[in-house]
Image (cartoon, rainbow, N blue to C red; front, side):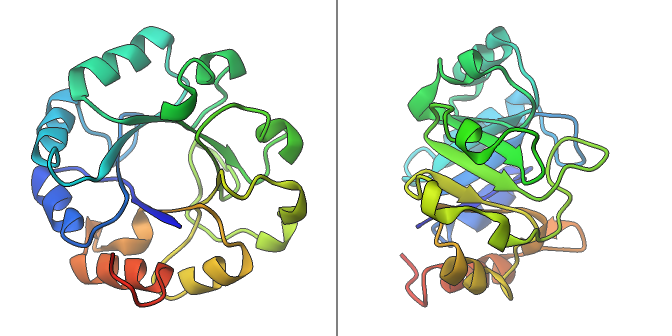
Length: 205
């Protein structure tokens, strides 16, 4: 089970997070309070180059040119599509793509998993803006017996206190968190440490 810590904004946050050995670190390029520019993202990917941690750039409805530019200018490993992107666009990146859907997407789960991406991330319900609402949705809604669990990602309202239940009840391939490991709006190393420990059942690597 992989862990992604998202919403990293500075090299300092990235190195602090990397010390806890997540599998992925995410940076937001879409409009958001956590949005960063490409030059900052490149500083982060350069700082993590020998860490073994994969980096992810989060977009909402990018063009192909924007996606390609992100890969070339920031040296990210993956792109996360968090909008209403066309299936054909996402599938141009396949094993370098994460496709996110809100749990209340109009698409069926079968249609969502028909996207050829490395992971299909199910997030909390979309409200006014793209991206999850930061609340836990009803995991029992997931038709787990029909899903490719090797590609299933889970996000939305996760934190160190409830992620163990997500692991037990859903057992996704990827667990994604952002605000759940923040204190006063900033990433907190102790919360990150607890979160990863609780995902991995006490193992730290």
